[in-house]
Figure (cartoon, rainbow, N blue to C red):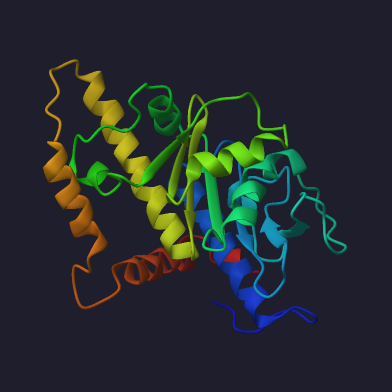
Length: 252
């Protein structure tokens, strides 16, 4: 990533901007987007109550580090960015950012598979190894309409609890993380689990679910290091190498 930050901007903010732009480009690459809608947000280091969000109206493949907009907890612009923002789209994000210091990064999607699973009464099922990493790690929030009501923020936080994934029923998916790498890893595999479930159910055959004790065991295994290296850090580095090949301008 580009080491030098623009004049008047901290190196820490510039680093977060580049990582957030990377998340948008990766989400576009893996087809997690909903045209110009939904958001990925990140807390600005050292600035209480300030966050970065995509400029409203731009496709996620267009997002760059410098085009991201700094906003406050109510979705209002901070500074003189020429780009518009969608304050209503920040309702869900602001609730979680305010309530949890660990949720420095939040990604919300409306993918076909994610929305499909959100409409099922049982949500994500324990059908395969990928899904089992989320055993006991998913929260659910009942649909209340388009997220414009600020009063819903407290209910969203209550629904999430301390879980890293929130399934917004009849709506979509949300993943949180302390870092860009952890958040993107969580959403990538949650989306993959949903895709597999949709494919499985489409076959119309009897299901073989994993017993609860085995599911709990596998979830514990996922929480333990599987090698000498930090798997998520290695994965994130691979993602960034991909972007260097296909979309290096995300850093601009």
